[in-house]
Structure formats: C-alpha cells, structure tokens
Image (cartoon, rainbow, N blue to C red; front, side, top):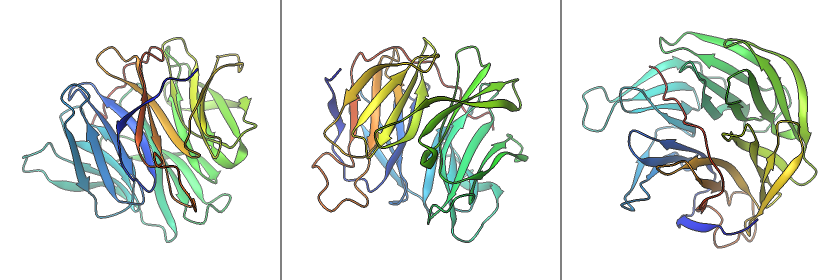
Amino acid sequence: MTGFEVAVHARASLGEGPTWDAAGRRLIWVDILGSRVHTYAPVSGRRTVMVTEQHVGAAKPRAGGGLVVNLRDGVGLYGPPGAAEGFRWLHREPVPGRRGNDAAVAPDGTLWAGTMRYDEAPGGGTLSRIAPDGGIRTVLDGVAVSNGTGWSPDGRLLYYVDSPTRRIDVFDFDGQQPSGRRPLAVVDAGFPDGLTVDADGCVWVALWDGGAVRRYTPDGDLDRVIELPVRRPTACAFGGADLTDLYITTARTGLDAPHPLSGSLLVVPGAGKGLPQPPFAG
C-alpha cells in the first residue's frame, strides 16, 4: 500500500505524536528535541507553532480547550489561546537524565504518559496514569523507551510499545489497570514506535529505522504495509473530518544524510477508519 502525500514540509528533528483535535479540526504534533508544538488544519492549510520551555514528548487537547503536554520534568497544562490561564504544572517530577516521551488519553480522559532516559538506558523509563487533578500512579516501571499506547474500540485491551523490545504488547484492561501482558506482534524491521488503533481494532505502528507503517490485526497478523522514503517514521494517527486520513510524523535526528522529507508530516488519504480520541479531562 502506498499513496502518501506531504501534509507539512518541515525539518523537525524528532517529529512525534500526531493527534487529531476534533473540536479544533486540526492535527497536533510535536518536535520533541525542537521543543515545539505544531498544529495543522487540513481544510484551511493554517499552521501554528508554539515553543515550549522544555523538550516536549507529547501534546493532547484538553476538554475545555488548551493542551496537556508531557515535558522533560513532568506534565503541564496550557490554557486556550488568549486565555488568562497560560501555563501551569499539573505534575512536576524532574529526574536528571530523563524526559517525557509519547503519551495517550485513555477512554476515561486520563493521560497515560511515558518517560525515558536520554541515553535510553534499560529500566530508566515508566508509564504513568495522570488524573485531571494531578494525581499520578505508575502503571509500568522498568521501561527503556516508553512509546505507543492505545486502546481497543471496546476499551478492554491496551496496546503498548517499549521500543527496544521490538514488540507490540497487549494487556487486558479493566478501565483502570492493565494485566496479562503478552506480545501481539514482534517487529522484524526497525523498531516499533508510535501507534494508533483503528475502528476495526487493528493496530497501526510506525517503524523507526524501518521506513514503513504496518497494520496488525487483533490476532497479531500483519495485513498491510505502507512503505515510506524516510528512514525514521515515528508515529501515526487518523485525522480529518471523517477520520480516514492517516497522518505520519517523521524524524531526521541521528541521520548523516536524511531524506528531504525527513522531519515532515506525511498523510495517506483514505487509509482506513480511525477512532475518535477523547480529550484530556483536565
């Protein structure tokens, strides 16, 4: 399967975390190492860029407007544009050598935020559940590079990637706590990175150093591959008014001769049917 287009020509060092903001009719994505939150409205073509004071692993829409962000030293909140709220920390927990990475909003509106060490040391990262009031609970520890996180359409399964394992794992999920961890699929080309779950319950995952996005069925069978010219696609998400366009973020960091599209936001129109993503409830 091919047919990608360039949504936004960019030179992001580490583009990540595409998220469709249904209320704003725009895609939100970040450049982690560039400390920037980007937005792109496909109908108007309007783009915005906001600079953050720290490396930003993920940015997700809030129910009342604004953003929740997974930063180097913890999770923070931005108010809507023009609001008096500005920025405030929701949960601040600086750990030397560690930063926030990918994150996802659960069906109940909580944020599941991952961390990792800059040196990617095994066991240096976590996956935590952050409630709207700032309460935090560590869900997984002993993680190396916490990455893609997503839920099945019925909310009863949790999918998760710790990239160096080269696995997409699946858990049973009771609405609060995952259990019964087991591999859904083992990746044999590159490393699994960010993921999204579609309306059929299939898991789409970007392959860092694999130059592709793959779709796996709920049984773990590989049934679709989108080959890309960039070496480091990082994450994917469905967007657009009908959630049928697959947006793909890419990176150029660490490459001696990156492809001209490395760091850009790509899109595959009509790739499938995504699930509506809840905003953060805080």
